[in-house]
Length: 272
Image 1 (tube, rainbow, N blue to C red):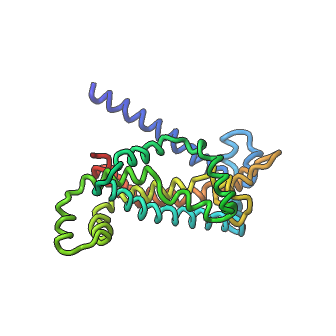
Image 2 (cartoon, rainbow, N blue to C red):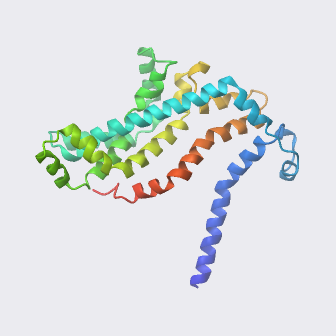
Image 3 (tube, one colour):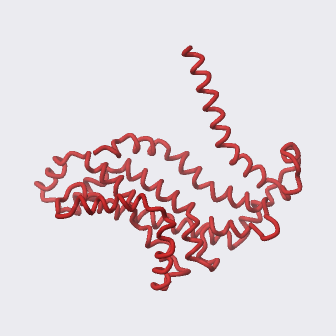
């Protein structure tokens, strides 16, 4: 019975893996065809000629390079800002005592359950009033600190023994020294998780970059890819090539940082 259950479990896992990997396979397959829409079956696509023309055209496009740079720049700045500001706020919630602390932390948590579509119109009006439409400020500033990052780091810092900080205070260390020289190195596993989560979330962000930009110079990669979708037809070859290039950083991050992700998620991040 144990061996039968094991076989069934492996079959289910294999089927799930195939279901998850097939879209990636399909994307790569179509990106290697010059006119994939002319094929009528999977066999026709598999056994027809392959070409890298779509990738060459995409790489040689100046505007695609601008989209790629914007996504990389925006996602990187937001990630760095979240690591700094979320750590500072989380440390206050985890270690400092002040009036209304629990109510304020509950308010931060309540923001997590608010769908982003709810704040879409108010945030857009705010960007218009600030004159930040078509600027990097609208793509970066609203996301420089997130309630999820505060919660994640606060829970982790709460598990760190206070004796470490007390020893640093006895040696004359300031609050800033303790935060960035004592607490921050200990939080490296969970900071890595937050960095990956934040970078990927903003790299794939579409809704707000689409709302806040209407000039090519500020558009990010997910927004730029939508312009391969015409009113009468879709340029599947170049669209899949662009999507494949945009997915490459995500795959690299998961390949090289999967160990840190596992360590961070098992390091007591969600313990009180």
